Length: 454
Image 1 (cartoon, rainbow, N blue to C red):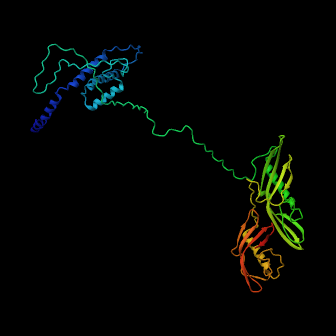
Image 2: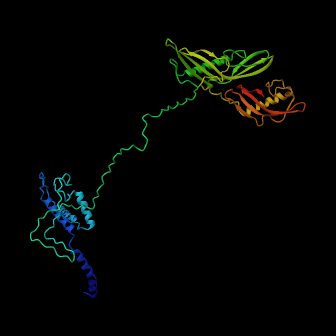
């Protein structure tokens, strides 16, 4: 022992005395009562009759170590229940002990049934006021006289107050909403709904063919009807007059007309549409008429008073026909073009611009027309009724190229090439004539022809 040890012992001695004073103090009366209640509960559990179980098959070899460990765990758990119920354990151990008891299903102190581990369905024991236990003295407050001790011991009555584990959380019961007798704040739903709005049917886009196939007709009846109408147009080119009946083309001229020759310039089936209309008679029989619309371009060559002339006709032809079981017959064309009077809902495709009618070729052909009509040797074969069909035009000189800056437009409805531009020329008298012009031209599959320059 050294002087340093004595100094340490002297410093620690007051702390040890303070700890002894705290540990040697008697627990509170409530803690003592809870401890006694738990001891009574343990005695009830141990005295309860155990159910008779069927004999188990004897094991081949015993395991004393494992059995001893299990018994030790059970003993420690039961022993800790008393301390847990009394609240004498530290708070961490108290929480662990309560959780283990709750998990293993250890009955609470107020449960006296042995058949249900959780105590469900057990009849509660009437609660009696706690009775002080013999041999336990409660310290009196300072300055008060000690209570008189009775010579006759009092009967011990177990208290039914059970220790409530701190780890258990009581879930509040759901709140019951009582319906109010007052009317709701929102307006009542009407008994009769609003007037139903029927959506308008979507308008069907126009079609170039009818969507039905008449009874007894082949599936390719449209193509057959269109080809039949195209053959009828070719037959119309064989006429020898400018305005033939039962044909769509027509031309006008003055003077004595002779040597009329028509020619079909376009492929009519490429710009055609076919529709079928079926009607039912009073006797129940049906009758179907097919109508074919085709765009056409025709050129006519003729002589008027001995001079060679050229004409042009285009539009929409209308042909009706019937099916005889193997082919279409009774083909009839409407006089002249029906452009602008096609059946509602039917769309006839436009004409296709010829491959030989490019802008350069069109402007070149129109330039040649201007040069030829203003030359002194002009023979009068110029487009009639325009700026080139005047007495002074044949004696004029062009100022510049009238096709410079001109624009070309193809009209798919008529098949004409329309050129717009400006011109300027000087007459033989020295007068300058200038202005704008619009030229109409067509392609006859061989050359570009000028119909008019106005």
